[in-house]
Every structure is written in structure tokens, then in C-alpha cells.
Length: 224
Image (cartoon, one colour):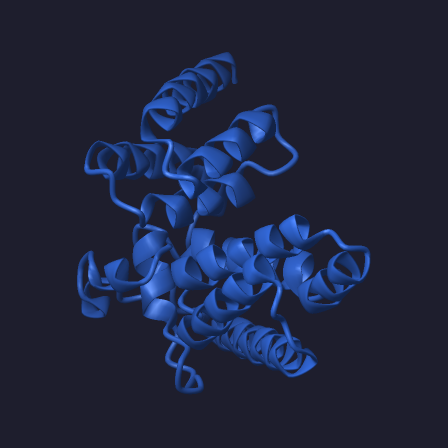
């Protein structure tokens, strides 16, 4: 889904706030920073959301498979694949891609699911280490999170719009990042629809949903 497109965007050096904590091979948070448009606060929020919402995905997939819900298991692996690619979990994305295919074709193994669980755990450990590094550097760089977050959805929507016009498969990962950002808000349902449409490459329908989502966000901003 979002695989070879991770190299797009400005080089990491253009984002001076990236924490310097060492991370394991197969994890590159500079890619996540590019997906967040260089916005450190947004990246930190997205990583925290991943840690809080998806740590137990391997067990959820096991439960889905045990109940014969292979489509749901496939969807869960697909979601992790997209989010990992967006946030910089390169190794996790590769394992999730393999698990997604296995779920779809009905040939999953306990060994593969264990590998998937270990990959999620390694990614979350890297997130925790990054968070510790951020705390140390808080006195160096201060980011007005509220203002940045307010501008971010429309910036992501602009990027998604361009990717839809290009029919770029990488759009799915950006849509998932937007959905996480808008969670529990009035635009949550629209963002979920957009994520599904981009995930299945329904670009025409996604363009219409995106326009509706943009109008809703702009209206909300004017009302504030």
C-alpha cells in the first residue's frame, strides 16, 4: 500500500526537531516526520495513538481468525501496514504486508502472527524511547501544539488531494494519519469513509469525500 513512496518529501535535515535517540534497524521516524509535514507535535500524537490503539492487534487478529472472520483479520493487518509505513515502521510494514496476504489467502501460521506481535512490540518500544528523548529536548524546542494541530488537518487534506489526483497508492497512509488526527471528532465518520475508499483505490469517490471533509473542517474552524 505505502511502500516505495516513503522516499518522497524533504530530506530529514530539513526537519531540525527530530529527536536523536537511536532506533533499531527497520524503524525510521524521519519518514513519519515527512508524513506529518515536518510537524513534530503531530508526529508525537500519531505515534502515541498507535501505541494506545494498536498494541494488541496481534491478539485481535488471532481472535478474528478463530471466529472465522478472515476479512476482519485481513483489514486489521492492512491497517497496521498502512500506519507503519506512514509512521516509519519499515520492518513492521513488511511483516504486516505478509500477514495481510496470508489472512486473505487463508494460510496464516502462528509463527507469522508471533512475528507480527514481536514487530509491533519493537515498534512501540522505539516509540517509547523517542518519547523519552522528546522530554529531554523539551527545553530546547517549544511547539505550540494547539495552533499546529488546528492547521494540520487542512495541510494533510491538501496532500491527500494531490495524491488522489495522481492516483498514488501512498494516499491510503495519509488518509489513515488524518483519521487518527480526527478521532472522536465530528469529522470521524467522514475520515473513516475516506480511509476505506483510498484503501481500495476508489479515487473518484475519495475525492468527493475529501471535499466534504474539507468543507466540514473549514466550517468548524470558522465557528470557533
